[in-house]
Image (cartoon, rainbow, N blue to C red; front, side, top):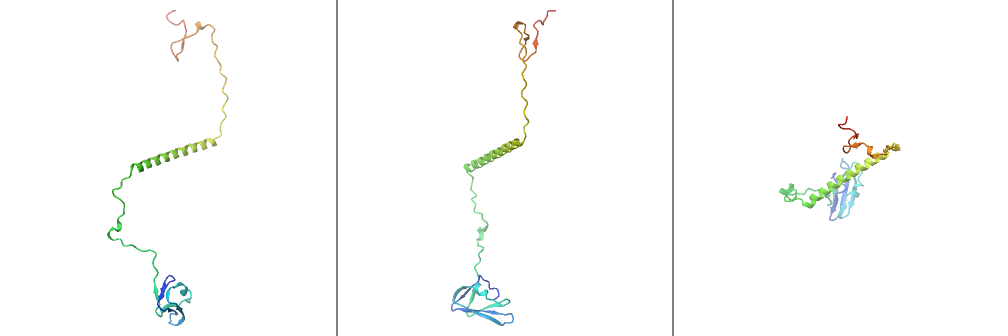
Length: 164
Protein backbone atom coordinates (compact mmCIF):
# COMPACT_ATOMS: atom_id res chain seq x y z
CA UNK A 1 0.00 0.00 0.00
CA UNK A 2 2.22 2.81 -1.28
CA UNK A 3 -0.49 5.52 -1.21
CA UNK A 4 -0.49 5.60 2.59
CA UNK A 5 -0.03 9.17 3.87
CA UNK A 6 0.66 10.70 7.27
CA UNK A 7 -3.02 11.66 7.59
CA UNK A 8 -4.29 8.11 7.25
CA UNK A 9 -5.58 6.29 10.36
CA UNK A 10 -4.51 2.75 11.14
CA UNK A 11 -7.23 0.64 12.76
CA UNK A 12 -7.10 -2.88 14.15
CA UNK A 13 -8.92 -4.88 16.84
CA UNK A 14 -5.94 -6.89 18.08
CA UNK A 15 -3.05 -4.87 16.71
CA UNK A 16 -1.08 -5.50 13.55
CA UNK A 17 2.18 -4.92 11.70
CA UNK A 18 3.55 -2.53 9.16
CA UNK A 19 6.16 -4.10 6.89
CA UNK A 20 8.65 -2.00 4.94
CA UNK A 21 9.53 -3.94 1.77
CA UNK A 22 11.88 -3.15 -1.14
CA UNK A 23 10.69 -3.27 -4.75
CA UNK A 24 12.27 -6.76 -5.02
CA UNK A 25 10.09 -8.05 -2.15
CA UNK A 26 12.84 -8.12 0.50
CA UNK A 27 11.59 -7.28 4.03
CA UNK A 28 13.63 -4.35 5.43
CA UNK A 29 11.77 -3.79 8.71
CA UNK A 30 8.59 -4.70 10.51
CA UNK A 31 6.92 -2.47 13.12
CA UNK A 32 4.12 -3.55 15.47
CA UNK A 33 1.07 -1.32 15.79
CA UNK A 34 -1.02 -1.42 18.98
CA UNK A 35 -4.78 -2.15 18.80
CA UNK A 36 -7.24 0.71 18.27
CA UNK A 37 -7.02 3.84 16.18
CA UNK A 38 -3.50 5.13 15.40
CA UNK A 39 -2.15 7.87 13.16
CA UNK A 40 0.04 6.61 10.31
CA UNK A 41 2.41 9.61 10.42
CA UNK A 42 4.79 8.38 13.14
CA UNK A 43 5.08 4.96 11.49
CA UNK A 44 5.76 6.44 8.05
CA UNK A 45 8.64 8.45 9.55
CA UNK A 46 10.37 5.09 10.15
CA UNK A 47 10.07 4.02 6.50
CA UNK A 48 13.46 3.75 4.70
CA UNK A 49 13.88 5.55 1.39
CA UNK A 50 12.60 3.62 -1.62
CA UNK A 51 10.65 1.08 0.45
CA UNK A 52 6.97 0.23 0.06
CA UNK A 53 4.60 -0.04 3.00
CA UNK A 54 2.52 -3.21 3.49
CA UNK A 55 -0.06 -3.72 6.23
CA UNK A 56 -0.56 -7.14 7.83
CA UNK A 57 -2.11 -8.82 10.88
CA UNK A 58 -5.62 -7.35 10.51
CA UNK A 59 -4.39 -3.74 10.22
CA UNK A 60 -6.54 -1.50 8.01
CA UNK A 61 -5.76 2.03 6.73
CA UNK A 62 -8.64 4.52 6.70
CA UNK A 63 -8.53 7.41 4.31
CA UNK A 64 -8.61 10.83 6.04
CA UNK A 65 -11.77 12.88 5.82
CA UNK A 66 -11.68 15.60 3.21
CA UNK A 67 -12.10 19.11 4.55
CA UNK A 68 -13.87 20.13 1.36
CA UNK A 69 -17.10 18.44 0.36
CA UNK A 70 -19.76 19.07 -2.25
CA UNK A 71 -23.26 19.31 -0.85
CA UNK A 72 -25.88 17.78 -3.13
CA UNK A 73 -28.79 20.23 -3.31
CA UNK A 74 -30.77 18.72 -6.14
CA UNK A 75 -33.20 20.78 -8.22
CA UNK A 76 -32.94 23.90 -6.01
CA UNK A 77 -29.14 24.06 -6.34
CA UNK A 78 -29.17 27.30 -8.35
CA UNK A 79 -31.85 29.20 -6.43
CA UNK A 80 -30.40 32.36 -4.96
CA UNK A 81 -32.68 32.57 -1.94
CA UNK A 82 -33.35 36.26 -2.58
CA UNK A 83 -36.86 37.52 -1.92
CA UNK A 84 -38.40 38.49 -5.27
CA UNK A 85 -41.00 40.67 -3.52
CA UNK A 86 -38.39 42.83 -1.77
CA UNK A 87 -38.78 46.57 -2.21
CA UNK A 88 -36.37 49.00 -0.57
CA UNK A 89 -37.93 51.16 2.11
CA UNK A 90 -38.05 54.93 1.97
CA UNK A 91 -35.51 54.96 4.81
CA UNK A 92 -32.95 53.22 2.61
CA UNK A 93 -33.66 55.70 -0.22
CA UNK A 94 -33.27 58.61 2.19
CA UNK A 95 -30.06 57.11 3.54
CA UNK A 96 -28.65 56.92 0.01
CA UNK A 97 -29.59 60.55 -0.59
CA UNK A 98 -27.99 61.59 2.70
CA UNK A 99 -24.79 59.70 1.89
CA UNK A 100 -24.70 61.36 -1.54
CA UNK A 101 -25.16 64.80 0.04
CA UNK A 102 -22.43 64.12 2.59
CA UNK A 103 -20.05 62.97 -0.13
CA UNK A 104 -20.73 66.13 -2.13
CA UNK A 105 -20.07 68.26 0.95
CA UNK A 106 -16.82 66.41 1.64
CA UNK A 107 -15.71 66.94 -1.95
CA UNK A 108 -16.54 70.65 -1.80
CA UNK A 109 -14.71 71.00 1.52
CA UNK A 110 -11.65 69.25 0.17
CA UNK A 111 -11.64 71.52 -2.90
CA UNK A 112 -11.85 74.63 -0.71
CA UNK A 113 -9.04 73.35 1.51
CA UNK A 114 -6.90 72.63 -1.55
CA UNK A 115 -7.48 76.19 -2.80
CA UNK A 116 -6.56 77.61 0.60
CA UNK A 117 -3.32 75.63 0.61
CA UNK A 118 -2.50 76.78 -2.92
CA UNK A 119 -3.16 80.41 -2.00
CA UNK A 120 -1.04 80.09 1.13
CA UNK A 121 1.91 79.00 -1.02
CA UNK A 122 1.69 82.05 -3.30
CA UNK A 123 3.90 84.98 -2.31
CA UNK A 124 1.82 88.08 -1.80
CA UNK A 125 2.76 91.30 -3.63
CA UNK A 126 2.62 94.25 -1.25
CA UNK A 127 -0.09 96.74 -2.09
CA UNK A 128 0.74 100.42 -2.62
CA UNK A 129 -0.51 102.92 -0.09
CA UNK A 130 -3.62 104.70 -1.28
CA UNK A 131 -2.84 108.07 -2.85
CA UNK A 132 -4.03 111.27 -1.26
CA UNK A 133 -7.41 112.48 -2.41
CA UNK A 134 -7.28 115.93 -3.97
CA UNK A 135 -10.52 117.74 -3.32
CA UNK A 136 -11.87 120.39 -5.65
CA UNK A 137 -12.19 123.95 -4.44
CA UNK A 138 -15.72 124.74 -3.43
CA UNK A 139 -16.94 128.07 -4.91
CA UNK A 140 -17.77 130.71 -2.34
CA UNK A 141 -20.86 131.98 -4.13
CA UNK A 142 -23.35 129.12 -4.32
CA UNK A 143 -25.59 130.97 -6.81
CA UNK A 144 -22.99 130.82 -9.54
CA UNK A 145 -22.66 127.05 -9.32
CA UNK A 146 -23.34 125.12 -12.46
CA UNK A 147 -26.76 123.56 -12.77
CA UNK A 148 -27.21 119.90 -13.50
CA UNK A 149 -30.13 118.41 -15.34
CA UNK A 150 -30.15 115.13 -13.45
CA UNK A 151 -28.07 112.65 -11.63
CA UNK A 152 -24.88 111.67 -13.47
CA UNK A 153 -25.28 114.29 -16.23
CA UNK A 154 -22.82 116.98 -17.27
CA UNK A 155 -23.18 120.40 -15.65
CA UNK A 156 -24.98 122.98 -17.74
CA UNK A 157 -23.87 126.66 -17.48
CA UNK A 158 -26.48 129.08 -16.12
CA UNK A 159 -26.56 131.41 -19.11
CA UNK A 160 -27.24 128.73 -21.67
CA UNK A 161 -30.42 128.98 -23.61
CA UNK A 162 -32.02 131.36 -26.15
CA UNK A 163 -30.14 134.52 -25.10
CA UNK A 164 -27.66 135.56 -27.73
